[in-house]
Image (cartoon, rainbow, N blue to C red; front, side):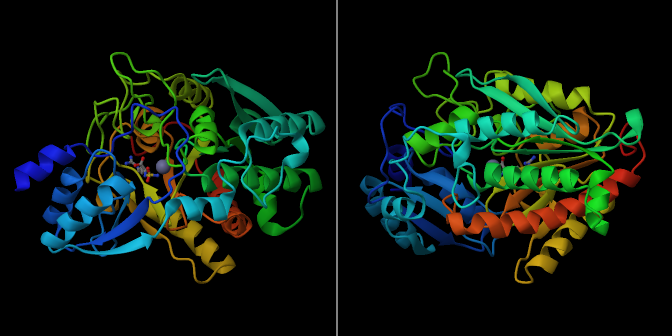
Length: 431
Ligand code: 0X9
Ligand code: ZN
């Protein structure tokens, strides 16, 4: 019976349909939250799910549920399997199609973007973000610099904006923030643009606010949307797309998981796949993707000054440090956790009900190698490296959350500035 179930349902982690150029409405799809304190049983569940179900979250903490998105044709079989194997589950989202149309007007957003569209009351398209970054650079030449890092698979420009006046010349410390490596995590690029906007405001005003003064003492690199092709695809075709839009040789399935593609120790470890149809496909080789190459090259050019690398993801409110490819902790684990805690405490001051879970990715989340956080610490030798899983309980999140989450992260970012400013230059002392 068990064998039959596995054969029918396939054995992969998460798979994407080869016919991915069609518009997916998600009508009748459900998200199931599956509860089980038994770690082995949770792993068995992952292996037993059908190929067309998508494991959205698989928390290491067994007190938290595993979230699975399934299409209507699989729901009956999956629920029968859960019930006959005594898994407890709730239907977290009754009809995903209805939810995403209500939250985001998904599928109706083919309108042409313009700079005037930039706001934080809605999720913006690539063109809007790109035009807005160009405008920021044009209007503020004394403290910004637009960096064209490279081009995506579909030839979209990959921008980072440098903000700062380098008050200590070559000795000025800097902080790197990126967003949107995972296409469907819309709150990530949105929060990155929110932070970029606050940074530009603070520099423009030459703010005398004590905390904001700290912000002015370092340089900032913000790359808000590093997987623009995947992001656009989530607006036009499949809201739950995760990867970039590479064509994979020998397969009809597109896309590489850019957060499994970095040239770093641990590439291929844990929740990673060598199957192009998998949502966690690591690519044909390390740094095979133009997006990974472009961002990596830019970070390396500034690595001696960048003291903190911060990459924004969603969801669940976790502040994660390296390593992610192993449960082993780095030598300076306590130092990483101290700064992460300062960030989370600053967030709590803005929103007392917001609680981040803090720890190393491999130990408290799940093991996954080839991610940008490990690369920033091990390869670029940047002293602090964090993945922040922003709040929410789904990749689909209400646009009313954009500003509150932006305000929270802005408070955390000011803490990062203070630490970056006082940290010694040079190679990470822990490496
Ligand atoms: O799996 C990921 O890439 C990240 N989680 S997400 O749900 N946003 O996809 C977590 C990455 C944590 N870092 C490492 N495992 N190195
Ligand atoms: Zn992510």
